[in-house]
Length: 251
Image 1 (cartoon, rainbow, N blue to C red):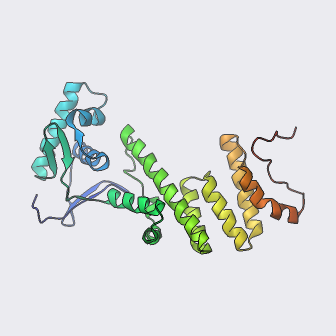
Image 2: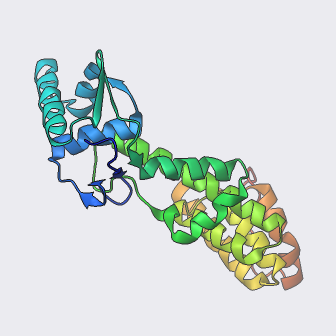
Image 3: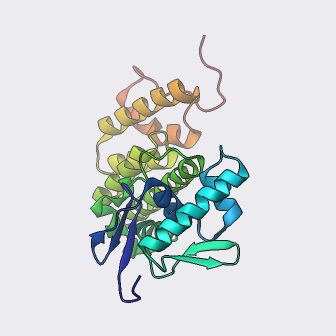
């Protein structure tokens, strides 16, 4: 691999390795090795063998790892860096997951420059869809959690600026990641109430309560009930709000 070549690794929405803009085909075994190093960072050979071939004997797994390393090194010399018993990717590889993580961490820290990034729809990007290795599933869950936290933080910030359109979009994005997110639902309710959409807020809240009860057997938090209480009182007692958490259900 030439030092002047641009190497990009895409893991969001599917696996793709490009050299100077041209896809570089790799076998599944090599894809898994490169993806593991990109997602998890430097790892020992023993760790990688056990991670990528968990159902094989140690000897078989180490043999598979050696074959994968050889194939990658022959296809793209210099992509893998060996340091004793450890392996990593060369530091010049551009990984879309790394850019996404930096943006998400910036969002949770209140960095306003990350806000427009959501407009591109990156919040819905999925890490290696269709891959079901245990380590991949774990990282997919971690990424979704980080996306949810970032969306909620940005929505809260937009609400504070009274940018109701942006806050609603971000809250809905968070709810698309986790429909039972209390934070995102609360922000969405606040947005609709601030915009005078009381009927819409009540509808969202009641649907949320029904889903919460069906999925978790739980009731909404007291502050969410209190948020809608004035609206309910003004509209009459025909459909009372759910009881507060901890209250005994009516017989």
